[in-house]
Length: 433
Image 1 (cartoon, rainbow, N blue to C red):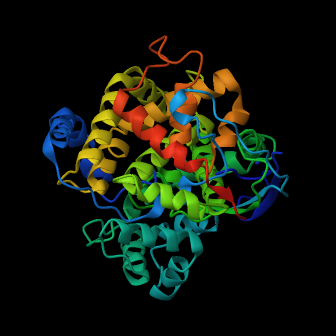
Image 2: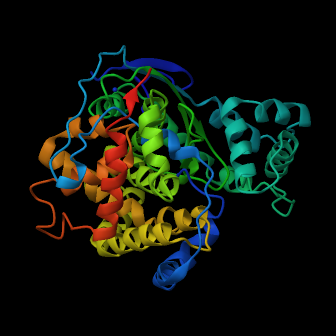
């Protein structure tokens, strides 16, 4: 997430005016290999004859806005309401959790009292909460016990929360070097993050974002839907890579602020109620937009080659997925079809298939966002931020370049029909805050 000007990351603030997880998942590590190998087998199982997806409702918030003419189905570019100037977004980045944990794992005399004090820091509370989101036990006491075991070099001790502080201890020098570069005012890294975020932030969005630099756990970066983010510096042993991923995670927080200002009107809600599985479809398109736009803001694929080994590895991975975007188009169509026809697999499972492991749908979201920005400018991404994901799909479909090259691939018919249906309802939504 966008750190402000570089002063100590501990707690510096700067305004992002724009006028400014990976999220990740409970099964992220186990899912990786298996998700790719079984991809198409699972997909065709979805398409066959599945009953009904059941959802919980986090991204419903992202589905509403005051845009879009009811001409959605006609392929005419959709108008966007004029933005209202807002004070902008300010950001605080806190590295206290990282510094406390690094000091603790090097202290063999660490006491339980001190370990519990470190567990109570806000960044580490996010790490504990993330462990619980994976279905693991996550408490201050388990955090403290894992920290003490790492400090004693007792790597055989039980670590049910998978805080992995032994790994952190072994990487202390590397993490400290990355943090030093991030905090170096001469490097200007946080200012560059601020500038990047501001290009994509809606001018009518204002609020405050808190970013926590942490170490430990099993997630590179994550958020909980609040205007805050968490970034594990142990997973990004490069200041350049950490800065780019921070842009991605920070933009998720900006999206969260934008979502809260845009709710369904009564007319839009009534329209949505008439569309079978509209909630699930809305969530799918919203996730596509959110991850795609954030991946463009924190653009790992566009990082120059040769910066460092870690950055090159992640860049090659991102480019590989973009190069295989055809499978992403297929997955989106089959997922949409499964939702429209009913399925015996939960929405969470279909989300995992697309957004965890190999992150197949991240690539398509990125390709869509990149094409929109290339043809209509970064401000077009800002206009779509916090609005229904169906508008993101429809804006893409209306591009002059749509479907004319491998870089701007056409989507399948059912995907487009579903997006058009939802977009018509979105035309009645209003900005209420």
